[in-house]
Image 1 (cartoon, rainbow, N blue to C red):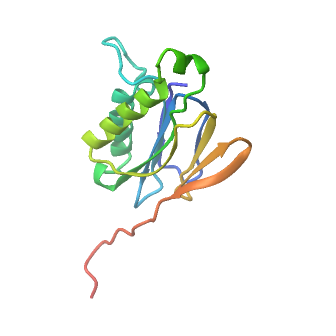
Image 2: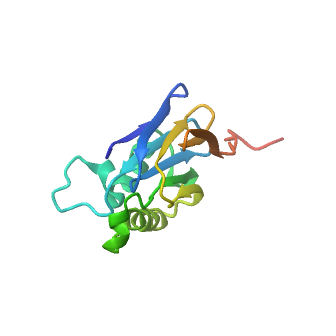
Image 3: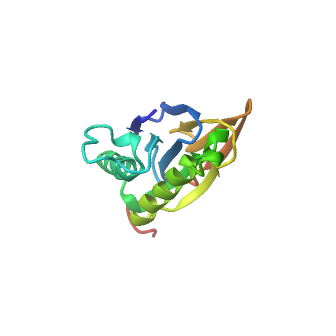
Length: 165
């Protein structure tokens, strides 16, 4: 929980398990094997957040973008896939508290501020999820209630080195 990772290694699969009200933010580069994943726990970082960038929506999205940028992936090629944000506990209803909803709003705002489109999501509800991001395949898969399925596959665009002739 609260972790963040980026990679351009085609052999890597990034995973996060046990998403309830937490939100998984996956960023994929549409032209390379670069991917990133954060397991967001809270909407907004306190003033002393330090190195825990993956824990908060308002710091995780910029940290993923920066990390992928260092790997050669410009923001303009990135797309997002979201999962989680569930309302897991009955006390949340009784107290009119919906942590998952607040996490999703904050993640959405951070992505909108960065002009990164959300291409797919599996959010809300009342069940937990796990997420796998496969760098080589450019896929995001969800495991929910014992079932796995591919939620998104990035259509890879080809980078050209010159004009066609």
